[in-house]
Length: 491
Length: 138
Image 1 (cartoon, rainbow over the protein chains, first blue to last red):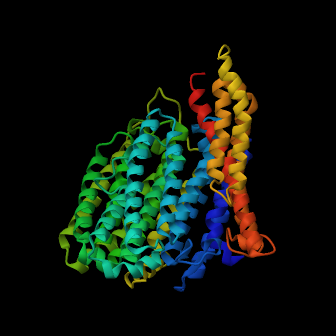
Image 2 (image 1 turned 90 degrees about the vertical axis):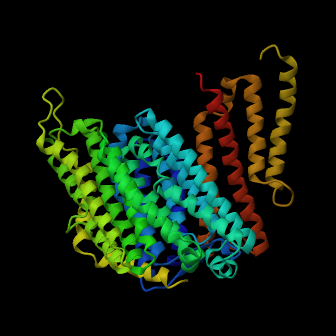
Image 3 (image 1 turned 60 degrees about the vertical axis):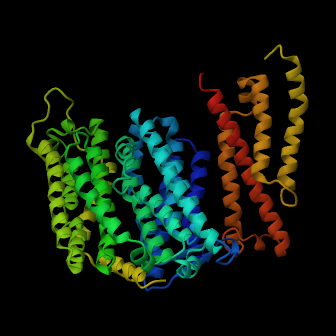
């Protein structure tokens, strides 16, 4: 049965989604989603243990062998992404039970969990497949379900946020599809490994250049790199808390994985960095994104929105590492994909706790929360420190490698920008902390207290991960470095 | 639409034909033009015509929301279930070869059941979309 895991990894969440609709009563859909997600996590861990030594698993869907059929291809990088997605959903779903009960009308709960599982299916599929067109199908599955999930937010503005995301996301997915169509037209194949062999001889061709442009812009839209990030702040702000935490930790991260996969595996590092000036373009956009988005975050009055802008900045850091085009930079990027997923996941779960207790995440409603909700705000502080990149937190590890990579290239101004933007992060985190700890709670409002354990435990698991990966780096950095070497080494 | 006698009579005459043609496209799809998607649309169109001519309340009586929603899910389950069945019989996911005694019959059976799943979901989705838009004002 172990040989069937690559398919089951995607199929089990896919089967869970309709099951949620059929068993629509009470807590059953939640239970299905939770079980499915935990099974997916167990399978992801098995996959990672199988590929940790550098082997590549290939699985032929329908028995049709690659390059004709759809191939699922698992290597270290894939397995890490699958583990990230399944792990996040496994931590977020226990949180969902109470949070969703509070935020979403009861007659829609089964639709919520069904949509959640479809989102999980899409993200897992994007990460695991080795077929360029299949990637598009899974992008659509995850995107369509996430539009619906965002629209379920309590605020009516959730609808317009979801619609904006729908328009931008569709443009992104269509660009991606046009690009895939162009490379299919010149090579006659859709299998990534096969493409990697057939593209190098025709690298100079204009079709391939256009295809690369379409594919990379499409993916950059999905991963919300500045200035293509405009859909993200509203979508994250108005989506239900659970959806924001899950999307922030996984959706942009899987899109980043696609950027790496298409850049290094399909087109090849030589094409991406020597024939096309990707390094310069990504560097400029990443630096602009880091500075601008961090600055904009400082002026936000809704803390969820503040964190959303901070996400745009963090995506900038990840892309910055890619633009170095060396192993240290790539390691930094992959490590930061994980560390930022843990950090932002934890912070958005804190927002979920506060929305559960206070109903909103506006900055003024944070007054006095340090005393009223001590455990929740302590998690926020630790997450915030990781966002800034203070030593002993996960954020420090990734920034360390980012600075190291910049110095290795001799780009010391970039290192200065990284450090300066950390100060900007300190400013926006401090704004929240100051109000929460040093301002007295309003005397007329309801007395707030920490949410129940069902919400606190998942929040603290992710917060603990921020600290754990800040101290014990052999797991995160070790695997990331292995994945980075695997990508740089070709194949 | 009570006084549109001609419309009602013609609809009554054509709806059974539409549904039957939907089934033909569905089950002949493996050897002729057609398949689950087209069949589902045709089958759903029969229901939509009924709803247009005889009113939404009557359509809701023949296709209640709970039934159409369940059928949407059921079709996906049938499709995915064929894949799981082929895995249980020792093949890869959706490898129809192992479903019957010889590969040819297996491929035939597999695609037939998968298309049935597609047809069920598409027909139910068509009716649901129609009801969602047409029933908005209530």
